[in-house]
Figure 1 (cartoon, rainbow, N blue to C red):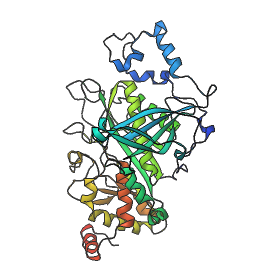
Figure 2 (figure 1 turned 135 degrees about the horizontal axis):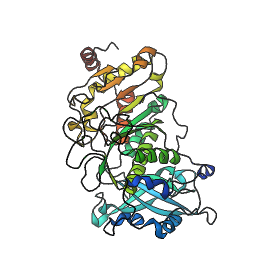
Figure 3 (figure 1 turned 180 degrees about the vertical axis):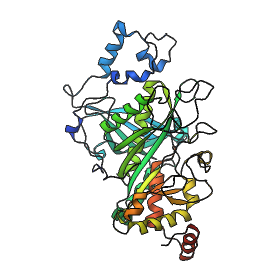
Figure 4 (figure 1 turned 45 degrees about the vertical axis):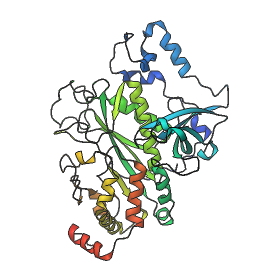
Length: 432
């Protein structure tokens, strides 16, 4: 991320009714995402794309669009709320819709709900009910109007968080007074790879083959270098419409790979925004007929992996003398390196090899303007003596609730022994 600006003021995810008045992302807006498919698709096309599997000339698609894009606001106060939660793998996103009697401005106005946890790998069949607690709301870019997307976390009927509910523990950490007083900011760089549907091979790559070596693809333009820009741009606009604090996007080093940045966000908001942005991206790639991958090393060999670099600062780091606070935070992070690595995403050992702009998974390191380190400090931060650090270790499939909370816990709440601190300072050449 180029820089950390001021965070969004939408900390509590409040939505005013007036903010719902802009137009939804219509079906026609997604049409360019069909990746040059022939207009006259055959009847053998996948069932989930039936809305497009007709000739546009016969009007059927237009009638479907009319229904999908109906504005309900003049006819009823009721809205549609899409309840979203994290499934049993800890990475898959699930959702279902319900009607709410009137528009809402805060998640506390929404009812709890439930679902069959035995169908998501989160509960046994004989006691399958899992309860959804609404936690954050966003405008729905697919339905428009006053309709909303609702980020939920998950509990047993007795009110206990289930094992895949990482938000609950994060909320506890972010509600600690020491953490609240430090106002932690996060800027998260979410990388992802687009895959061709049937062959699960990167978009734009010859099936079973490889493009030219890395070099011309990063932040590139051109049909022979940039693959999936329409998806990236559609996602960018949809997130801004939803109220997600997206700060930028770019093509990545490996062709078919993209990145977007979310933040600066404060505390628990960072995780809510990343999960909702991932859901929107899943929906857009679904409509485009492309597979979204958050695998940290989707293609083996001399190709960059996919990370989720997390830029982080506290109030003390952003004030005069903050560089000393940053160095103390780096000390703490070095002493808990293994704890962080174990929580930073599945398959990360395939990515953190010491090559392709990564540090070795087994060794903690830090440096100024060094993208081959575990923790990078920007040149501007060094010069000004205050700013932020970038944790380059998290994988693209990391849980943002876990990563953001762990950074706050390690750098604000956790205190090492003086002996351990002294040894780490000597090893890292840090004068704290």
